Image 1 (cartoon, rainbow, N blue to C red):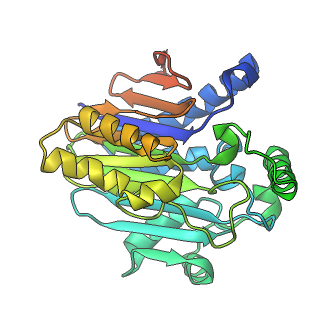
Image 2 (cartoon, rainbow, N blue to C red; image 1 turned 180 degrees about the horizontal axis):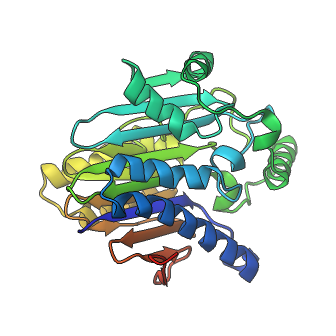
Length: 317
């Protein structure tokens, strides 16, 4: 049996000098837990769609990452979350935007895909749909974290005094995502985010925009993270798939080129991708990207900065 799962916990990390050994260990543990959540599905012969859903749920439940419980605040001090899922073979897709209440926004996106005739639901309409589907809800305090609230206050003060934006990438954006190729060669992608710290209420980034932050077809599955407006304008995820299908480029070549081009245009961020052979690409153009991958051997590889991924055997866990 051969399968592959890759995840990201957001491009834009703490600066290396600000990353304590304890914090780094916490991030790697969170990534490993998410990898294991998806790995269990694939090991049992389960579908790529279920694997990416489980992996993203684990990241949404971890307040270290900007999705679900760790989502950042809007400028109004509220939470507005986006999520998307897509299956390559069928091109079935579902997404939600601007929601606050569903414990796991990725499950809301999955419900839109599987239980409605729609692809994207937003705001109160999406919330009502989630209630009708019986999804688990949490009240606002569940999503509140001290670190995210302090980041909002710092950003609002910077805007008040019109100071230069000296924040690191971690304070500007963040997303979580997963891509997988299952034992049958099927591809799927899932992405979830709280958006950008201090974002305008109602702002929607690339995460739920198919072809921008999330994409899966017969050639590859992509989940992106970064400056969403730029990723939308250049249809980043779909551009990679197009270069593979039409330009006959490899996943690695297409992904690296697109991420580099986005960086030159001001699109700070990165992405994860997997193709139908199980090959993985994890490029980014900023300080770092929380990322990981795992295959049938059960060895989890995780990384944060521009260094080789570190391995840990999880198959016996």
